[in-house]
Each structure stands twice: as C-alpha cells, then as structure tokens.
Image (cartoon, rainbow, N blue to C red; front, side):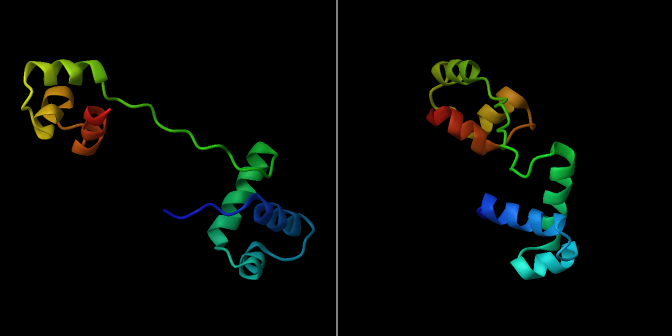
Length: 103
C-alpha cells in the first residue's frame, strides 16, 4: 500500500498555490506529485479551511462475533464458506470471517 505524502509537502504545495506561484498543474510538476492530488488537497482545504489531512476512519465490522462463536461451538468442523452462508448469505467475504474466527 502506498504511503501518504507528508504534511510538510502538503503545506508547501498549498502555500505555493495560495501565493500564486503557478497553476495546479505546474505545481504538481514542480513538487513531483500528481495533478489529481493537488486538486484533491486544494478542494479539501476549501471545504475544511485547514491544510491538514482528515483522519481516516475504519468501517465498523459487520461480523457478529457471538454468532460465529455459537456456530463454531455447535459445529467445530465448520468451514469458512459455510460460516459465510450461515452468517451473511453472500454479502460477506471469506477473509473477514477468517479474521473473526482467528480473534
């Protein structure tokens, strides 16, 4: 997974744009970032009024650990695909169920 650009780079790009030192495309080339990223951070600054990144939120798990525990206790040799169908039909993948079973 790619790492996020530093806050320092974000501030430099936004301050250069605010000072009129070039267009977004020119600043993207100068700072060696994509033009889309410059557009994105400029829009985020207009929306929030801050040049800092918005903290990322993790989605809440839809897996009911108690239900999985009961199913495994009732049938210890149950496989992940069977857990998937028993808990969520086809709405959940096998990997989240595997993580829940490991926990």
